Amino acid sequence: MIDSRFVFLAALLSLVGAYGYIRATLRGDTSPNRVTWSIWALEGILGFIVELQQHVGLAALMTLMLGLVPLVVVAASFRNPHSVWKIGFFDAFCGAISLLGLVFWALVNAPTVALVSFVVADQVAALPTIRKSWLAPTTESPWAFFLGVASTGVTLLTLQHFTTAGALFPGCILVADLIIALLVVTRVGPRLRQDVTSSSAARVA
Image (cartoon, rainbow, N blue to C red):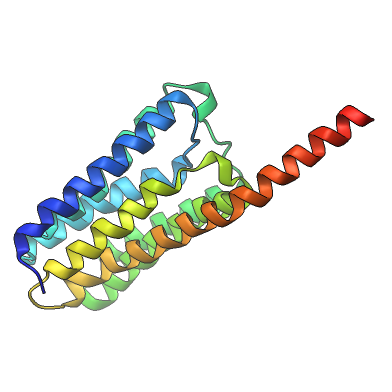
């Protein structure tokens, strides 16, 4: 394990990724799914409160970033009409399931069950963006998610003792960010080639 002060490096990586993503959103280059990012914001803030109560330590700072950054992303998406991603049934369904998971988390008395419910809610909230990364990869920025992988990876390494409370939430975020980033990177090339081919065919016709 590494020194716990490396969590500040994790926070810096998160801020760099957030800056790039928010800037791209303001320019209309990315179109964040508001369902995903709104629930991520709520969960990050709630997770930070829980980690403070369980004395996780400096690693809780990273969890706070996981709440504040999505909040700014959602706000930025309202500044540019090109940054709006239309919310469909699948998005709304995942959002409702995630919120139910958070309600269950708040009501259940068993800490481990509550934490698992919290993490499941977080992963379900990621599904709309994962789906969007597959269907419309050019509306996402992979680098913000790659930096998210790096920052949560550093956060995990700063844990002096691997506990469920300290490791599960950032660990699952690491996995979700990695999936999204890889989807965008691997899908952008084929999607652009398809768009070019379609445009050429339209001109010929």
